[in-house]
Length: 144
Image 1 (cartoon, rainbow, N blue to C red):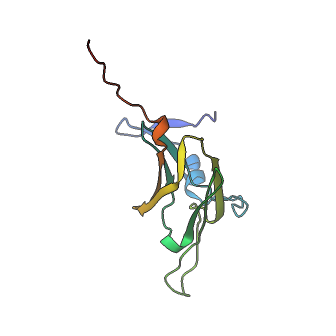
Image 2 (cartoon, rainbow, N blue to C red; image 1 turned 45 degrees about the horizontal axis):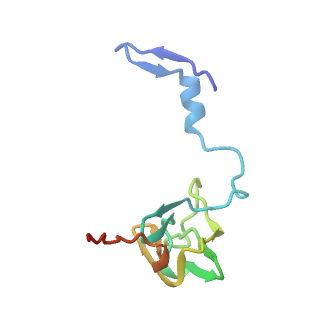
């Protein structure tokens, strides 16, 4: 962990030394072009379904492909930088772009013929229903 030099100003508040303030305000020097965009995912399981959620902000519906082959769920996409016109240029880039592919092996309990995908507010949600035979069932107890 880096130790930062901290001092107090006239009001008693702690502030960074001006040299460090300048260091943290300049653009990063290293080249980020080798970084790749990999969306984060959450997987939620309930009694009757399996749900995947992916963070994919700034993408359009046509930028995303969801497919299932055998028991392999595949989510592919491409996030590009979008400039409003040719007179604009990128000064600093912190939001990653590029192609990605995430794959997940699905459990036998999931029905691959019943899949729903929805994209809203930068979140891609994929729901798969579980097979009826693996869902919990309530058994009636008969009294004799």
